[in-house]
Length: 303
Image 1: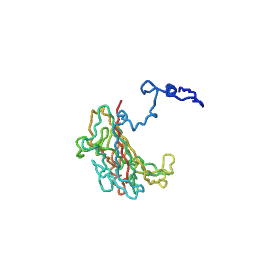
Image 2 (image 1 turned 180 degrees about the vertical axis):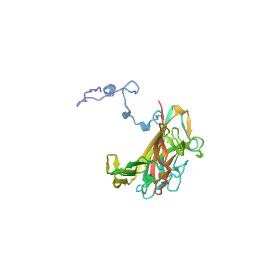
Image 3 (image 1 turned 30 degrees about the vertical axis):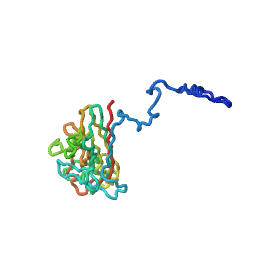
Image 4 (image 1 turned 90 degrees about the vertical axis):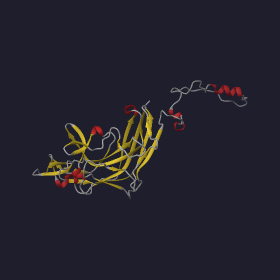
């Protein structure tokens, strides 16, 4: 960048207003601030009105804070479909809702709503639920020395968490999955219910269990080498973006979060789905524990 050179005031030199004004003339800018003479780092953006940046920001605690996981909520595996699922709530069974108040939050046609969330979770299970009759969360593999078969987990079974919104009134009694998200209750083949992956735009997945084969050879698995791993506490996060340009001006009164499981990927007629494996999730001990997290919503201009 350019450098302004100005001689220092020397000993005995008279300092006058005119002389000082002249010295600072080179530092003055006659043009308004623009992209050529300033940058974002020169401005204290939070102190400026900048609707073009983020005109509204909201935050909500999900669940209830417990740093040491001494207490937690428990979600049991779904045993029958269709299912309404479990609403994320605190320890007093009060649903965690991002409430936008009496008049709601209107996302204009030239705006986008950005929603982010996280939750501390721990999947739990006992035994080998994937071996339950009719479960499709397992592989049947040749055993070693290939005289029979052994059943092992695909380790692709998951819990899902996704947001629902109410766009009808501030009574918050008519929650439905957000745009682009299914409720995993679609009947896609036979008695199977779930959602096409193309309709899972706002869902986050949580591994339900993990089994590994420590001794495999030539396509065969040693039954004694199968190990089921303990699933520890972990953070799961998700995001959803809603564009007013795609749906028109929309008023949202509240958002809540739903947990369902256990589900497993499946392909039917060349379409990929996440379907409920009610046979594995109905096994005693299959559950998801959770404590707390945060949700943030930002409304920003598209241009």
